[in-house]
Amino acid sequence: MRDAARSAPTSPCVTEEMPVSPASSSVSSRFRYHRLPSASPTSAPRPTAPRSRLTVQAHLDALVISLNSARDDLPLVALTMSRARFHMLAEGEALVLALAVGDMRIRSAGLGPVLPPYRTVLGLAPSVEGDLLTLHYRRGEDTAPRPDGRRYAAEAEVICRPLRMVFLQAQVVTLVDYINEGILGTLAERAAASAAAAAMEETRSVEGNMLFKLQAEGASLLIPQSATNDRCNALRIQTIRLQYDKRAENAGGEAHMA
Image (cartoon, rainbow, N blue to C red; front, side):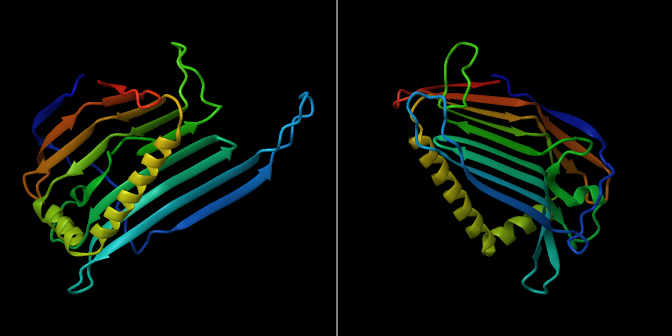
């Protein structure tokens, strides 16, 4: 197990960053749906019933949600998501899911003089390429055996690329108050509960060993001396890897963290 974190000395930490404006953002999506019956094998000695195949593909270029003040309707925070892709293939008992999100950001707006790089409260770290979040899930007959010979009825893997967080008290307090006092917190709580319930139901339906992998490729927390000062303290966390091997028939499991 290794969990390393270190506090860097005060240093310039302003980096170039492309601002995202709700007024200028574009939202577009593409969705494809196919349901085709697969042909029965002709060479088998005894014909079997055909299995249905379901394929779903979706792509979202950009989505921007602006959280405005209830007092004067001015924008406070903008939530953005870009380059999201989803793929699902279901055939018989086999299921393959793939989800990728290019970037997700929380940006403040209209909270006084703040250096542009500090307005992004949370998002993909600058200069990092690739997707912020990727998820792969596989269940059924297509699951391959591991090098040690053990087979898994289902496998799930989540990879999170390096995150950057900026702590300015005014921005953080504004966001927390908006969530606690509005309906956003209630909606997020219900969505999280529904997702957790669906994951538990899927876990119970799988008969056999299951393998879960989580990899967080580090994160950095910046604490500026002030909203207009380019010097700040930085706390960086190294890569964390977590693996959980769930045994069949409620026989427990084994967890590893590094």
